[in-house]
Image (cartoon, rainbow, N blue to C red):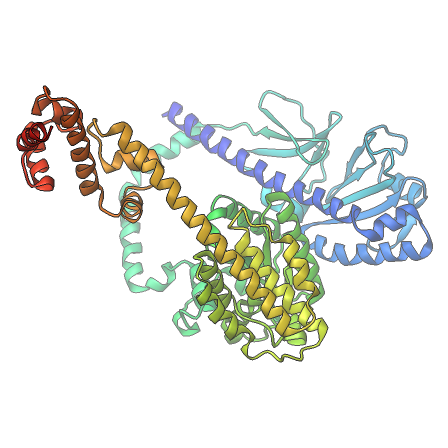
Length: 616
């Protein structure tokens, strides 16, 4: 029993350590990307090159806006210049030397990262590294331990800390100075983002209480069975309480259930305060989600983990390509900045483009489903506003372009283009341009051309060989609707022609491959499945390709091919036996060969042999 408990505990311990380490790494990645995001902003670059009072004010305002978002996740960022004694915090500008002395930082340290902490806060001071000789920026990250590290608590199994230069800093709020004396049960992980180690010290674990509880379990087995019976009874009495609360929330937002059908939502959602806003995040290239089946779940997990610390956010996993966040009591500008930052980071880190739409303020629960539908409609404009990570309803209301066409129309056009169906494309293009004013001003014509370019770009990205880049410039230069339509039709015609050429060349290539395979293998016993493996296609697709390219099904064509080969052999060898001919053309049985020969030629092989001798 002891060994069993020890094995189970170690398995649990390792899984907890790995999970908490993963969450910690996501958080430090977020910190690092926040600094990079600020470092590359023009506001900070201008201040570094020209630290005037005006540029300082711009930096202060930017920091204040950014930190209103960062603080929800338990951290703030301050900024300064190594050549200046002014340091800019989210609240005020301070004297750098006095400020660093108060926080117990060593100004003459050679480390590019210093760490200090107190009971509730941790401070990370990032200096320019030796590799960045031209960089002068100083970045201070102030971490609220109770928020930032809230989901890395493992008091039952041990304690976590950050180690730098043999100094240990607890990630949990504590009045006691952390001491790591026994390094026997110490786990050390190098952080990927910052120059420090993540430390976990295992707590001494007494297994004998567990053994006692195992014995106790046996003694109370009958009680457990009785409790299970009660639960089953309660389940049938009150089945609604056993429905997953998150599913209730999803079903309500999607309009599948009404409030009267739902007993409770998630606790976090019920604690959100009105007004609310919905933020619907969707895969930008939502027509080809199969390309992102491995990455998208990881990205969703990253977004959930990043926003999980805040009590102002709840999430609903809508489907394979989208996720919804419900935001409480937050200004629209903060939502825009915050989610733009997150989605930009996702694109850089995971090479995956996501787009978000934001609803109006929601003051009553019963308007939640309607606002979700609005978010879906706003995302119809994502290709028009492809340069934005977050699309607000004000975009669509302000511009509400008369030249807009829906994603459904675009999908139909793309399918016809990829199938080489130009007449079908022309019909859809006529519908798109039908209600557009031919006297549309130049700016709107330019916007419309950009929208059309996005559509062409999505299609041509799937073609590979077709270079459309030069054509896009011509689209942008068009100044009238009639010219734009003609140019767009011309490009569509080129794409359709390309597809036709591609399909024809592919057919010739496949036909040649099939003929060569038959020539090399007709004397062997092979099947359509063997041919499909050779071509690299599925059995069903190979069957369709064979009939399309060879004009007959596989069985008939192969039999006829072998019979023609047998006739050549008979004509060239007067002394050969029928059995030998059958084997040479791939038939194991001479009877089968004779039957098939007679079926296709109308006479037996022997008769053909005699007629051939007579003719000679």
